[in-house]
Length: 362
Image (cartoon, rainbow, N blue to C red; front, side):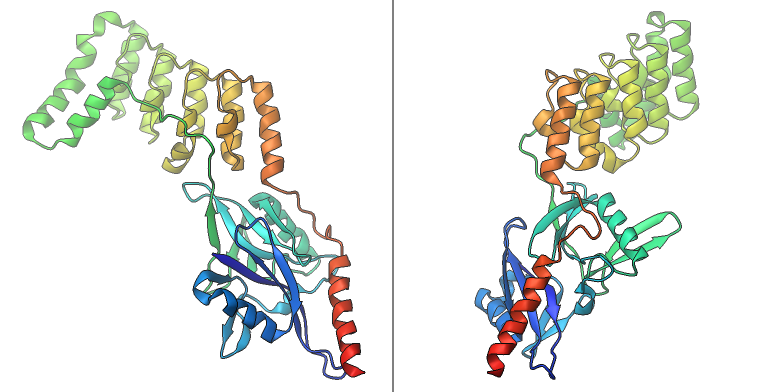
């Protein structure tokens, strides 16, 4: 797949004999790029050379032998009020589809990947200058929510985050697996057995529980949580409370319903694994071998959209994890400042057009 985008544009000036011209970039890996300045026929011929089936024209299309603006006017590429608009080539998403960042092309032909919050700030700052930061994207502010959307009829191409290392998935205690298995069977006998487990298991093991633990078993059942999830005398009452409360709130607390997890570790997960998507992104760090400080660095890596598997090792200190996280963040994303792009590339673009016009007039 090859991406094509027009990142700079000069409108035809009939009086001066300057034809319309386009700066076209192409990239197959969203990392390395080729760029060239050409007229309309040059753009069309370039696309045809590669074949339209293998091409993604990001902010234009070819129709009846003409270039058609499909994602905002090319006039939005103009350098104005200190802002050099970019072209958004693709969204960078997590395996669950959460938008982490974007790949942008500037008028000089350089590609950068930026975090979502950084691009949102760039859009907001550019709006103050009455300029859109991306030619082919729409920025909206509604109440406290900010969005970046494609033009109607368009979509942003998505590239999914990759990891260098596969981490083991967390497991749940065997008695909880059995509980889930029995609940999944709908025969009358099985239903009676589930009721028996709910009513008898805590009493059966009651000699092994303190009064405080028995209270947690009773309260869990009162709130509609199967007490079997905390039916282990090795849990402290506080651990029990964290586990069943998280379960009541719809979290997958069975994955840390293990006495090997400390109260602090359990609380860490109960406060963060708030929905299915977040659980799916964080499940590989559910490991009692990590300290809370290490878990914090791993969790921040998940949130930032970097390859946290490169430092997911209990033997690496939290301090070293922090350093590695910062290094990965710098290598994964680029900083972005409104007006930070030099106009030199645009000046060269215009100079080339003028020189070409002078030669044609002689």
